[in-house]
Length: 384
Image 1 (tube, rainbow, N blue to C red):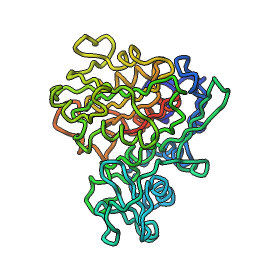
Image 2 (tube, rainbow, N blue to C red):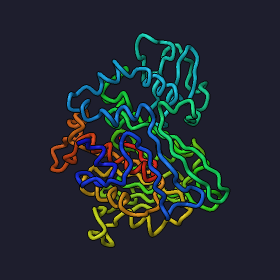
Image 3 (cartoon, rainbow, N blue to C red):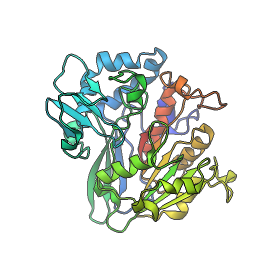
C-alpha cells in the first residue's frame, strides 16, 4: 500500500477514507472557514516533477538511489530549477543564487557538468558591482517544475495563482548530498535558496497583518546552518512582505542576549520567550506554550500567518503539525525541518546521540505530511 496515499488522506498509519482524492490526481479542493476573505483556498496541484517523486520516492529511498535519479535521469529538471532560482545574472555566463546568507554561483553555459561554486569566480568583478537580487517569480512556463495553489479573493471574486518549490529529492535543496560544489558535501545541504516565498498579493488585502511565529530561534544572526529569523525577514521582504509582529521561542538563549542581536527596525515588533514549548494542547502551561494556540489567540481572520518550526524534538514538532492538520487554524505558511529515520542521506547528520533525534518514519511518510498541509491550502516548505 502506497504510504503517501495513507499520509495525504489522513494521519500516517491511519485507514484511508474513500472520499479523499487519489494520489495520482493529488489535487485538493478543501475550503477552510477560518481563511482570509482575500485568500480562500481553492486547489493545490503538484508539478510534473513533484508527481514523479510522489509516485517513486519510496522505491528510490529503499534502493538508496535518490542522487542517481537526480543526476542521471532528472538533470533537465535540476538545471531548469537552478535557472528559476537565479536571483542575479552576472557577466561571463554566471548566475548568482542569493539566499541572503551565502550565495551560490552557477555557470549557465557549462552543459557538460554542473558547475556550482561558493567561492566567487575569479573572472567576476567586485561583489559591490553585482545587480541587486531579484525575487523568484515562477510563471505558467515553470509548471513542470513548481507546484501550484489557486486562491480566491472573495472581495473581488477573482481567482489567482501562487507557486511553490516542488517536493522532490529528500526534501531539501534538490542537489543536497548529491553535488558538492567547491566546498564539500554539507555546503549545498545548508543552502536555503530553493525556498520560494509567496508573492506580495497574498498578504490579505490592506487590512491583514503579517505575523511570523518562529519556534527554535536561538539568535537573529546565528544558528546551525544559518539563522532563520534574518533569512525569513530578509527573503520575505525581498518579495514585498514586511512582518508586523514576530513571536520567537527558544529554550537556551536569555532574553538580554537575544535582543542584543535584533536589528533596530525589528526591536519593537519582536516578542521573545525563553521557554520550552508544549507538544500538545493538554501539555500547555503558562511556562510552556503550545504555539498553535498562541497563533489562534493572536491571529485574526485576515492576517497572514507564517510558522517556522525547528526545535529538534520530533514529538513536540509532530504535535504542532498534527494539530494544524486536524483543525481549522489560520496558518498560511509553514517551514519545518522534519527529522525522519527514513531519510538515509541525512540520518547521520541528525544522529546526535540524543534519544529521539528523529521520528521513526519513512521519507515517504514525511512527504505525506507536507503534501497534506499543501492540500489544505498551507504553503508548506521543508526547511533545513
